[in-house]
Amino acid sequence: MESYPTMSSHPDSLMKKITLLQHFRSYMNEHLQKAGATMTAGANTTPREGDELARLPYLKKWLRTSRAMVLHLSNGTIQINFFQDHTKLILCPMMAAVTCINKNRDFHTYSLSLLEEYGCCEELGRQLCYAHTMVDRMLSSTSPSSRLEDNT
Image 1: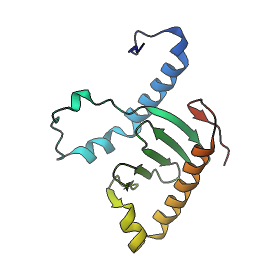
Image 2: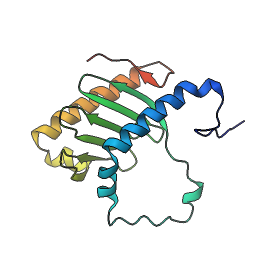
Image 3: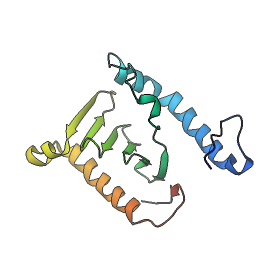
Image 4: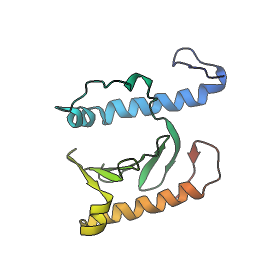
């Protein structure tokens, strides 16, 4: 049976997850809200027919390394937040594309097939290699938990 707990009304068994969710919400409100507003400014945000039936993706697994926070969402999307320069990579399997958000919060989306054909700058290449390593690590993990430990 499906249930829909809320932040204010949830079973005690979800307290650890609620605490984690509050941490992420606080972090995002403090550090990422302006980036999101910049990215969606001017974008068509009118709901489409059928959107009300779509389920929002949720966090399936995550890991923190010395370099980055890696998030794997239920829709297959991987987001990597790099600590040193606050850049981000968002890998979307449905679009076969990667979106890069730089330290100035400018973003660009590239088709993976075009990156393969024409190449990319050295920094994006390093980040994509790191992303490949992290995806391999997540895929090889048999841990059913939502958090993967890593010390790299």
